[in-house]
Length: 240
Ligand SMILES: NC(=O)c1ccc[n+]([C@@H]2O[C@H](COP(=O)([O-])OP(=O)(O)OC[C@H]3O[C@@H](n4cnc5c(N)ncnc54)[C@H](O)[C@@H]3O)[C@@H](O)[C@H]2O)c1
Ligand SMILES: CC(C)C1=CC=C(C(=O)O)[C@@H](O)[C@H]1O
Figure 1 (tube, rainbow, N blue to C red):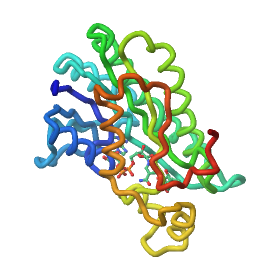
Figure 2 (cartoon, rainbow, N blue to C red):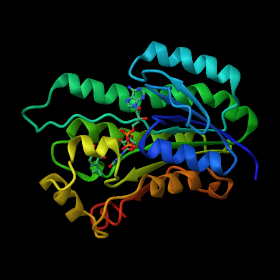
Figure 3 (cartoon, rainbow, N blue to C red):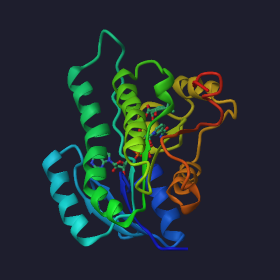
Figure 4 (cartoon, helix red, strand yellow):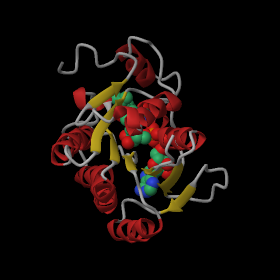
């Protein structure tokens, strides 16, 4: 197995942390970006940056691409603010687009020259089941739909470079982000579970396993795809 170096945004918790653990256990080097980097147990290099700050993110990426030869990027950081149509806060809309989308462009553009030069690379963008329609998540769903468009467009542009670009669209997963809006035992949780044929939440490592596969050598003929990892929730809702 060739050791690879992967850049993961939002790496300190949830899906990003589970992925960092899984990749490190497989022998790869993980460079994680998160707001807080004071966690000595992180299984790689953890860098503190507020990814909503465009210039701070640019500066960190410039430094990191001088230190590391990134073989892949996982755009995992996510931001959500609930809001019904008629009550959508335009600041939330701008924040959703800025934090869910801008860092994805910044990280990939920073890592792209090296991946192109080596003729091998992986990009995995985190989308969400919400792109199929979940109430009160307009701004978040718009951003996560754009992540799928980024994926398809970049996959076409990079198809002959050895760099693949794919998306993962999770269903409800037991993480801090999920629990911010969906308390255990709440009516909201019951509504989400009713959407899931498996009738349970996903585990962060189940998502990590799917992302790790798309980062692997074995996934070299897969590009431009969105994989719903959702306990069956997208069956009958997603286009074939
Ligand atoms: N958990 C779910 O049910 C679910 C469902 C669908 C999609 N997703 C998507 O999966 C991805 C991971 O979600 P999660 O549930 O693991 O989230 P989480 O809240 O558990 O972790 C988010 C990570 O992002 C980091 N982060 C947040 N804002 C940041 C900022 N401004 N600057 C730097 N780092 C920041 C946090 O420190 C943390 O490491 C997100 O893109 C989310 O939209 C999650
Ligand atoms: C699973 C998906 C529809 C989803 C559920 C709830 C969220 C939230 O944080 O409120 C999001 O993680 C979203 O992706």
